[in-house]
Length: 249
Ligand code: ATP
Ligand code: ATP
Ligand code: MG
Ligand code: MG
Ligand code: MG
Ligand code: MG
Ligand code: MG
Image 1 (cartoon, rainbow, N blue to C red):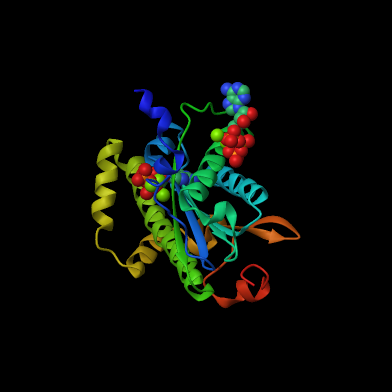
Image 2: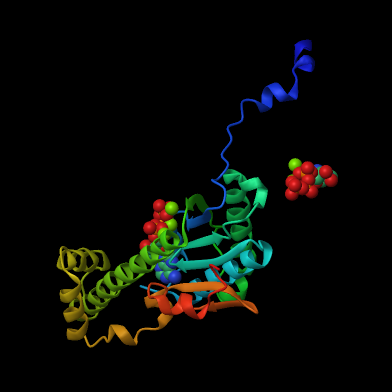
């Protein structure tokens, strides 16, 4: 066991695997809350959308942009956030595990330390955690496709969830059924429905989907515009990118 002193550090370092992200590509780090279905239940988030929970996520994302200058844009929905690093970024020599772990742990710390700012009346029952991953996109066109995909996902989930909770709420108020039974009935009613049918359903229950707050329908964008700003806009169409050419410039 004296031999351990003779082992050269380079020998041990040689076992590390290099997870360097491809140079001059847009790095997207997407983080996502671990088991937030449960976390949102335990903390009685409003369904389908708890606005304060979203505001907390957005505030943490703004803090991430403040901390990591190389992040040029972030898009968030539900318990997830995608952070876009400038394609020239040399952060941690583009070492993927360093970048992901630094961002995800910074975000988690902020989420916990800012909790009371957003949920004054609610005690945090247990500290949540987040996972993260990095993906490289070689062109701004493909990066925009990625962001569009997340915003489409936001819309599809939000439309489904809005229908689901409208049905559950209606069933609970009118039938006196058990909560669990209302949920499974609502789920069955929505199975296989298309966008059109979901719109009809919302109309039938007197809900104007287009009148829902932008933060629910569009998700949240965080970026620099003299200062760090949080906006809820369409990032699928060209308009936003034409109005903010410096972001992907
Ligand atoms: P995993 O650990 O695999 O990510 P998860 O339970 O976090 O599992 P997700 O697919 O990430 O599952 O979904 C997050 C869930 O958190 C949503 O389905 C929703 O129930 C809940 N949630 C997150 N944010 C909010 C919010 N602002 N308001 C209401 N519910 C929310
Ligand atoms: P980086 O962000 O690059 O990791 P760092 O400042 O964290 O920079 P490290 O090489 O990780 O640098 O070193 C951690 C430093 O933290 C130590 O040099 C020491 O100054 C301090 N530190 C950590 N743990 C303790 C401890 N238990 N008692 C006193 N100082 C500590
Ligand atoms: Mg996850
Ligand atoms: Mg999650
Ligand atoms: Mg999620
Ligand atoms: Mg150290
Ligand atoms: Mg250290």
